[in-house]
Length: 194
Image (cartoon, rainbow, N blue to C red; front, side):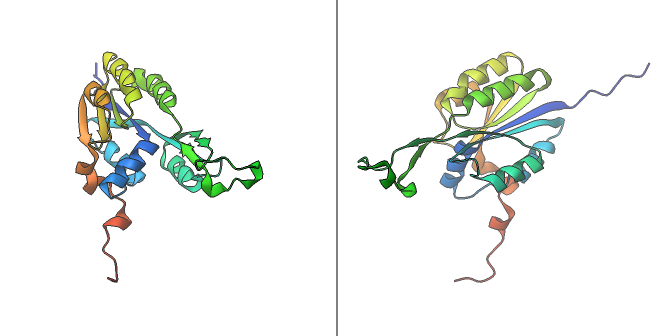
């Protein structure tokens, strides 16, 4: 009787686009979603089983080319509209006096979507890479770990809730992955120096 080789451990990737946008701004460089998939797919003994990207939108056309590119790469993209607040400190006398540039937006909270997706894939997943700093995900991480999943939290210092960091098995500083993840065009020296 032949025994089957053990199956590779399954990895799930969950990227909080809002949290990562600000983490990357703080670091001063941006990662390439394609290179993140490559890094996840080349881990010894791991097989990428699912990849999710969460994004807040101002309107249905917001980030359309980027979202389409993510889907083409293999991400499942989840979106929610940003909540809009009236801009400025004073309300206009007439609603028609509102200007689009005076709009203020508040983060679209996609933590429920993150939780539903990761709990849904948990039975066939062994490890999760969570790219987020959201304090609201600490209980999710505890539940996933109780189910036997290994959780690696990837973000940057100062942009991660202590509770979330403490709940994860491992914390990876996003900056330490720069050589693996940075967008290629950002790595090329400019042709002309000004």
